[in-house]
Structures are given as structure tokens and as C-alpha cells.
Image 1 (spheres, one colour):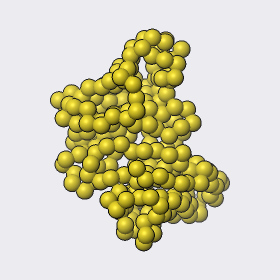
Image 2 (cartoon, helix red, strand yellow):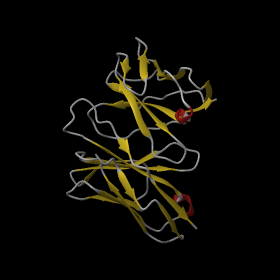
Image 3 (spheres, chains in turn yellow, green):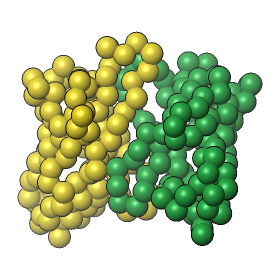
Length: 116
Length: 111
């Protein structure tokens, strides 16, 4: 049973460029959440997708957008990259409505984005 | 959202039990306590969660005080591979949503 996968592993971009990160959830999961982790900090919630819609959003600007596909995989897009966007981007998947007790999130290995 | 307090760092000898405390005095009645750990530069790994009863799985045990204001994660026989940052996170159940990570406890297991 494959866990959460993310691509690419590492990425280098320059300021002003746009980037797309990809996530495939754990088999059977239907909800995808994205987190940003700056160096030395804990992960911060960006947004969560369920049924191809953004369900919750953290305190991130509109430059951060996402999409969920019918197969539950997801993309995170960041436009007009800033130096401060350099971070580890984490994807987590979970059940939502199927699991009536809890909806434990399982994380992927992350994508390391460096903005020069 | 409940606030948590964890010691910034702890040491543990290999083979001994590691007891990691967390204070969550403002936790609400329908918030579970989740524990995750993160080994350097990897994604966080789910360990265990509980509401008010003690829980045990193949990785760890979770002891929650009767008033639910604090909890302790126990790794019964710590190994070098348990060296990581451990996060205690209260979270509402069955409502999707975000995990709020604090600074966590950096556990160093030493030979």
C-alpha cells in the first residue's frame, strides 16, 4: 500500500516565477492538505481540499492556489515567487466523511523549494 | 484552538523509556490529542492520538490526565532512530481541518 507521494523532491526557482507541486494521497484517502515548513519552524497549514473544493484555508496570500482532481490527487501552485517562499512543502492525506471518528492526516516526504 | 507547551529539548539514553510531556490546559472537550514526530528534513510521522483514555500502539503509549490538561507520550525502549522533533497537537475530531504545529520537543537519544 503506497503512502503519500510528492513530486518533485527538490526544486530551484527564481523570484517572480511560478511553481506547481504535486501530491498523490494514500490509497483510499479522499482529502488532501498542504503545509509550508520554513527552516527551523513547525509546518503551517496552507489549505485543504475535499471533493475537488477548497474546504479550509490558512493565512496565506492568493498567490497560493490549489486544485484537486477526481482521482483525489492534488496540486499546489505558487505564483510570483518570493525569496520567503523557500521552504519544505508538505502534503498530507486523510479520510474525511468516511471516517466518523477521527481523520488522521498522513504526510508525504515533502518538496524542498528554493527561490533564488 | 488549544495552545500547547512542550519542553524545547530532552535527552534519553538508548534502551530507556522516553517520556515526553505536553501541557494543553485550554483543550476543549471534543479535541483529541495527536502526537506526530519529524525526523530531520522528512515529513511528519503520525504516532498516536487519544481523547481521554490511555492509548497504546506498536510505536508508543499515550497517557492523558483525568482533567485532560496534559498528556505524556511514552516511547518504551528508545532507539537512536527515535531522535526527532515530537509535536503534541490538539485537534477537533471528524471536522477535517488543519493541524496546528507548535515548536515541539527535540528528543535526542544517545548511545
